[in-house]
Length: 217
Ligand SMILES: Cc1cc2nc3c(=O)[nH]c(=O)nc-3n(C[C@H](O)[C@H](O)[C@H](O)COP(=O)(O)O)c2cc1C
Image (tube, rainbow, N blue to C red; front, side):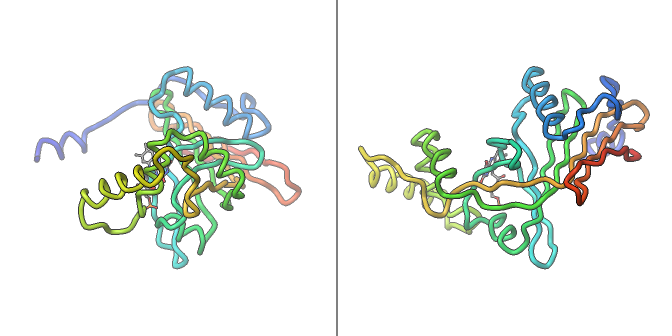
């Protein structure tokens, strides 16, 4: 264990693959995100759509977890989850959230901050209908973020739901659906040597224009 601690303390990685300059980024951060996302996919970054979604309680206590990005467009960044989960309770009381992607193979991080709204039922229904039946049953079977007595409880619930919906179309549970984060800030981070990283930030101004700046690393 002592060796592991020493290993962690001495772990060094110098970022050197690429640079990011104000003149190279797109004026529209959504298009810039799309460029980087495509590059993450083309570079075979593992789970490129995995992102840390950070929320906070009414009292400001933060909570973060990995979720999968399922869509992004002018309206925002979409993820799906259980509407009774801890994150859902946070969002109900405090709609501010942030999303963080880390694409290690590209030495890149993207941070997006904004406000979150629930998707409407038809949007959530449409996405739910695309999921495999096993995932649909999973959504029905899990009281996400609640304490359960043991694994068997979960497996029994799954079997019960499987039996219940046998031969039937599995509808979206009313307690499951999408959220859209509408950004007011983006930051694109590119690792550089000697910890002198490039950080380009976009902030949404009152006139609805994006102002681009550079942050110190
Ligand atoms: C790679 C990965 C992807 C995940 N994707 C989702 C997702 O799309 N939706 C979801 O509800 N949970 C997803 N999870 C589980 C969440 O991280 C988390 O455990 C769960 O949503 C409960 O979070 P909460 O208690 O803070 O609400 C994923 C976990 C990992 C590691």
